Amino acid sequence: MSDQLLVDPAEPAAPIQALLTALLLRGASEGMQAMAERETEFPNRLAAQLTGIALDPTARGHADDILDGYWSDEQRQQQMLRADGTGREVIIGSGFHAAVYAAVRVRSGHPRPLVLERDARAGGTFAMTARPTFYLNSRNRAGGAGLAGDQQAALNYLPGAPIQAANVGMREYQTNTDIAFVIRLALAQFADVVTNATVRSATGDRTGVRIELDGRSPLSAGRVIDARGLGDPISQDVADGRSILTFAQFMARMGGMWPLRGLRRAAVIGGGDSGKCAVESLLGIGPQPLMAAAALDSVERIDWYAEDLPDTCDEWQQQIRGRYQAIGRYLRPDRLLTVMRRRARPIALPGAALIDGRTYDLVIVCTGNRETDIDGLGDGFFDEYRTADQAVVAREHYNLPALRVGPHARLPFTRQERDDGIADIPQNAVAMFRTAPKTAALAATLPALPRD
Ligand SMILES: Cc1cc2nc3c(=O)[nH]c(=O)nc-3n(C[C@H](O)[C@H](O)[C@H](O)COP(=O)(O)OP(=O)(O)OC[C@H]3O[C@@H](n4cnc5c(N)ncnc54)[C@H](O)[C@@H]3O)c2cc1C
Image 1 (spheres, protein in one colour):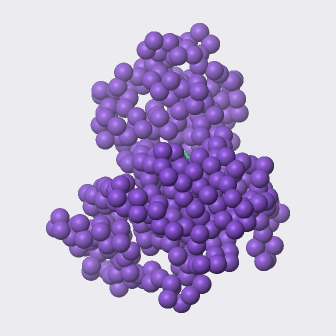
Image 2: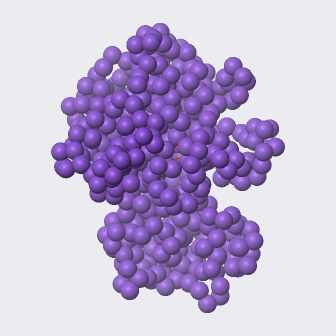
Image 3: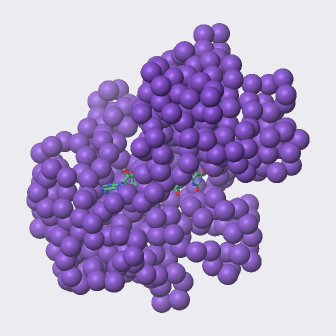
């Protein structure tokens, strides 16, 4: 690593400069102007400006569009993909962990990694919609990185990011697009991003990796950070995209016009976080969609197929954690939600879906994810990777300079995490507060590449 590479995190990188300039040309944002008064309360001017943009919905919308345009520009993409790659790190995926790795890596004095994202929109799971469509389940708190029990620690903390989720709003539980904005700004500041770039395979040896992409020329990398995330829905083959939807397809619908129009009877299959967020949307207690009103479109009956969930209001209130308490109120016998404690497999009919002889206008299948296939980077190729203090923070490929980070690395709970009670909540396995420090430790300690 060289001193000249040390980046001043207060200086906007090219995409951030592009969005600041474009917003100023549009007459600045009210948020940016208001923030000028409070600039001294921030670590630097850039953090004040970006917080101003994040808090001003119009400016945030413009900023999002500018970033999408920047990252999808074909000429810029070609330039990024053609650049000589043996000294470069390539990150697969553009979600929370790509942003953590890039931010910490660059701030530790290494070059900007190249991020390859298969979707048209960078930002990963939380950026699956451009409008808010679900609430996070981890509380919005100010503070630095830390564990769930530490009231002074922020749970949605992105190490090294220009601004934190706690800068973006006051709500106790923020929306997916709040954290997505923080992730996207971190990527803009600390990575080169190419969207619509699906990685198909990785081959090579200890000295480098050749990466094959869908419909584009191959490229080389000195190291691959595999941040593929939670994977693809198991239910992908059952969903027909019309009356049977995956969680992501349903969220895309909730992000569009009149998402609940024509829905009288709906079913949700699966009781995890995605299932709960889908049920909240149908009940009208998720984030307000752009065009939806109770007078026009209210769902009359929701059947929820989930083997392990309580089916009465009282049991719900005793057994289910705080974030999802509101759902329990709809489980009274006269209310519209019924938990069916069994497995279900829907069948698509013309204009409807069928489960156990009942027809539904819409079925949303939230039954978990399976790994996205990339030849050469399958599960069996990876083993635990430890930092010098013996902490397991990632998984390392046995033959390629490739490491898996985030929930995708499936790191078991440590003894400390069990002692601290973190392991008592299974969802904590993928929680940002648990996985971010591991990815950050990896980014801070991996040796430089030979030509870095
Ligand atoms: C409904 C829901 C709510 C959640 N709420 C919370 C919460 O409140 N708090 C919390 O801590 N955690 C929460 N999580 C978990 C959290 O979303 C994940 O742990 C986190 O997003 C993982 O980040 P990641 O970067 O590893 O992966 P992701 O954000 O999933 O990003 C992975 C990216 O990789 C891309 N990709 C995959 N394959 C390829 C390929 N072959 N080529 C190129 N790109 C590829 C994908 O398109 C995706 O954009 C929630 C999850 C869900 C589903």
